[in-house]
Length: 359
Image 1 (tube, one colour):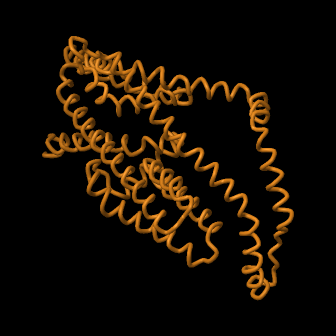
Image 2 (tube, rainbow, N blue to C red):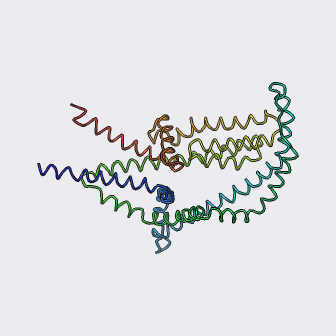
Image 3 (cartoon, rainbow, N blue to C red):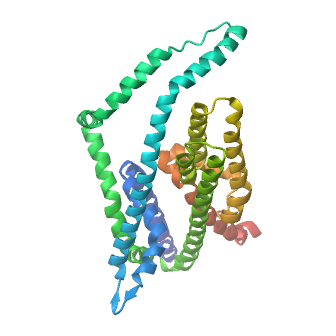
């Protein structure tokens, strides 16, 4: 009897330790944002650091630290290049929208007001002169951005300082995670009870394979959808085609957000640019074709059923992630759901082979 208790107790202790760790993690979730973001980036760019760390120039080997710095410089350069491309284009297009908004309001008043009066007896109350004056005034005061920014910092100083510190933490934590990734994984592996090690290593390997395939496939879908949006929207003459394509395509990693934001921006730009409803319809067709292309061709081809989740389960996973952990939960819902699916698959295999099921 004593031997049996000694064999059982360690299992309960490990379970209690794991439950306590998850509870602490949940309680600390409000400050975990930078660490989660750094961990995701480290997982994505770890293979690149592995490759660079094996490079050699003559007798000089790059090493893990140099490779990590090189990858982080490349990531920072790409982010800066993306901002330098998107921000000026958006600024130009927003100015164009502000200039054309009074014309759009006049068009609505001339075309929609007669219909409202005819069928509902309600006038469309748009004061074009007041709208023009308001836009001009606010556009001129927009030049005092530095003053407004300083006032905002004064009013919400602690929140902004906290946000800025969190932002600075991401590259610091990312550097150490990229450099010490294999060491951290090995230290965690040494803590796993030896009788569970083989099965845990197998499950972890499958989860790693699923997540790697999912990330590679999702990145390929995002890039191809960005290219499709850019070519299609330019071909129908939308002036804001490139910024809309970049936003709709690159936000594709957040389910339903990229296409929704891109469609709203495209419709707003088209309504202000084109004079008739018939010229706006091609914009809708582009997004309809894009969704068919993504859902029926690109995602099955590049991602497929690799994450092993049914579409209904995908929707539930996204809603559950958002409800429990907010925006971070939506970002992590599908990868975490895929990892849980791997664990449940192994649990199901163990249950089907157990005496509880067979007897």
